Image (cartoon, rainbow, N blue to C red; front, side, top):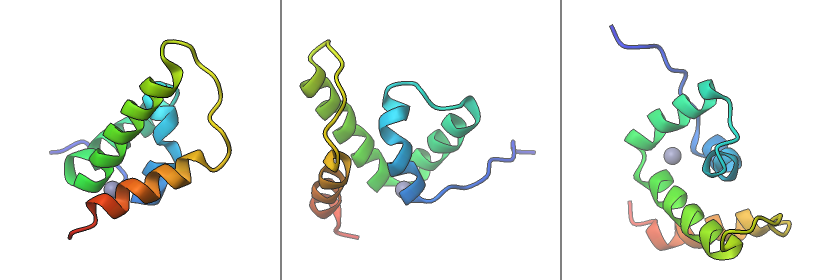
Length: 84
Ligand SMILES: [Zn+2]
């Protein structure tokens, strides 16, 4: 029997994805997101884009992302990958 993991939506994944990259999500949420990534190519693309961007922006030194940053990033990524 599989471990019961409550499904979450792409929108919930995107809302938490910067926290996920920073390793600041609850273990339970992390498990849900990892489960989601196994089944959702779009969210994997967003995750990779977020990781690359965060790495680029922080360059080893953390500072807060500007408001609206995530939304713009996700719009760019999802339009680049929206060939369902
Ligand atoms: Zn998704």
